[in-house]
Length: 125
Length: 219
View 1 (spheres, rainbow over the protein chains, first blue to last red):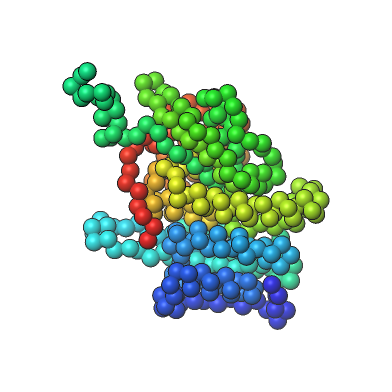
View 2: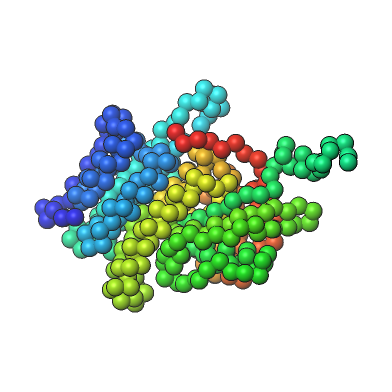
């Protein structure tokens, strides 16, 4: 992974853009961007199955001196209401931030805020 | 021969309301005490151990399992195949093994490579298990993405989960934080190291993992 000395890209990816992708395309897109050193903020996060698949793909992509994995934080799906359960309406996962683990570090997370730090140059190791 | 032929009444009730044998995965992030807990369970019920433990993360890099471990509590019991899985993480940095734990470069790189394979193996085991003993470190922030991802995945699969809030022998532990973080799941504070509260854990395991649940298919 090459870090851009001019700065770090933080890209906000819209729900519409993510909806265009299949699950596999979405995960490929995320990993490709993160491996380039970009930080992504997804308007709509990943389902639990997509999250575990992303971890699995990430492990396969790790190159010890160039890509050590990802930092990911987000909010899980809202609880389904009774009506949504009856009509099997799947609630979408919420906002998620994903970046290269040597660059993005989570400082704090609670139910209202995810606080991260981007450490250009030296990384978060 | 009784009213139900060769099948005992108890067996029919079990078939209707629950099960007697379950494959249970011990899951969690690295270094929360999964193998220490697996060793505790096996030592208490079989006299055996599962594997070695270490303060260096990713000590367990290949899933290990023990079949037919019988856990009893009063009149109830459950046979379990217990799977001790490698810790799940989103990153593996070999430099951490060198700089923090003093391993040499070759050892660190080898450990990191095996750790990544271990994470993949852990995730794949999720397909074939009946329930999860999710181990969390009660001295740490419970809202990590790994904890949330594992829990979300288990909830989506409709698998029974029991959270073991480990390391309560440590002064800075806060099992109450874990309980309030995940109120939808049973949380049992334990010390896998000292065995504190393990009786409570075992009785809850029997209760939680005997339940018959309809597994959801992946969507």
